[in-house]
Length: 275
Image 1 (spheres, helix red, strand yellow):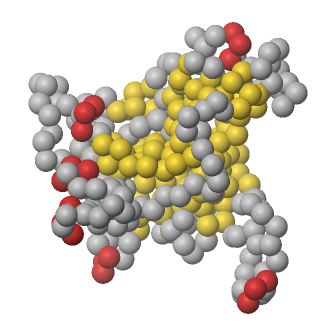
Image 2 (image 1 turned 90 degrees about the vertical axis):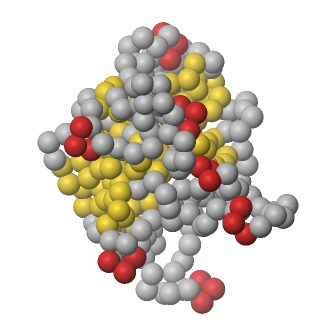
Image 3 (image 1 turned 45 degrees about the horizontal axis):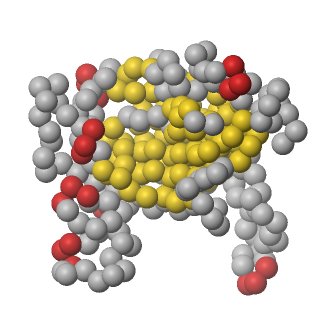
């Protein structure tokens, strides 16, 4: 388990997963590798299109987080030999990062209820905390807001956890966090739901499907939220926003995007120097 630094960013890896973060020209995930064995298809890149690390809506203003984008307008695939990364000047921008051990999400004693008494708790792994500052063109009341994205990766399992923390210790008045999209990933098939084939997303066939072929296969990327209310991880389709420079659409392509969002329907929470 380690964090590797390279010329333009860092790599968080446990040997099974490797998530590459670019820092220049902006912060964001530029590659996400599943190091599967040959029997399971070999190493594969999960990422199909480069997107912001998330979005946050403060009062009535929506900001991208990190601000990393690709200049390529076709989102069905990435041409890595001609990859041109760009930055969004209106996004929350990278400030710094730090490393720590995974935190304990809740109290638990190994051995409880017939569990393994030798299990590690918190689990073994590494945590990456990345701090972001508001864009310089944000309203004055948002300039004191501080946003942190935390990533945890665990030993011996292809599993990650990600969450956001928003504070505003220097705010003179409360700022409303109406919504935060914690994870946005444009992924390849079979990691995401097969919207391009006109099928239902996995798990959405509860009302009965006319035939087995109309329900997408279970995705290789499984995302869940640990929030009891107001949060959801869902699959969206990039087809509407994907277009070639000549104006051609990519009919037949499968372009699933994972969106994990809190909160659904608001009103969200307030941050200030007292909360």
